[in-house]
Length: 218
Image 1 (cartoon, one colour):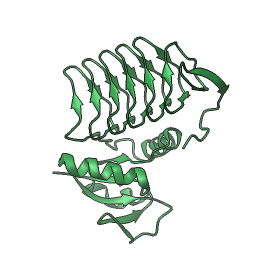
Image 2 (image 1 turned 180 degrees about the vertical axis):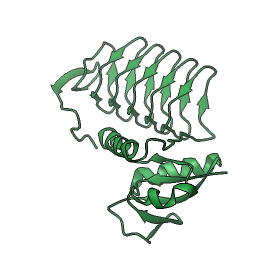
Image 3 (image 1 turned 135 degrees about the vertical axis):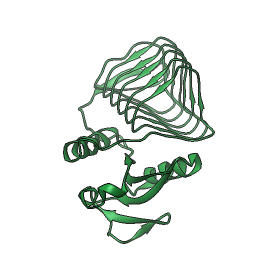
């Protein structure tokens, strides 16, 4: 069984660890988090320190996953890891209760949680997150670093740009396009295309204001 590390020791990391354990494909050798005390323990796994630890334990680690909920912060860590360790392998984690249809593609570093559904020929970009009971129908495309919160749903042929967030309970009808770095508010219904770099909510969802790349939403 391949040995991996998990980067992050917050609430999202706990959920990711559960997915990895339930899938049973990898052995977690420890957790990296520069904000936690090295030697402390979370969920039975030792906090090893920051990403510099990999230089000392490289032969013992086959890969890992960035378990940070915020899309933009997650991307910064991925960029830093890639710069320090160009050959580092990012694994994906899929809960055994998730449904992944024929032809679907899940990018590296992505997490698919319990009860999530991915339709046929749908592409999930690298380092994206589908939380519990999120559903993406057939022939859709999610860019990299996208998040679908719990109980979100899209129709078929939906395209969601990189770094965008579909918040809890929101729905997107078929064939809609949502730009990059956009946040759709909880419980909203998207029935028309929406541009990038905006916050939109309501039923139907309307653009409320613009937003900047990296602006906090959690």
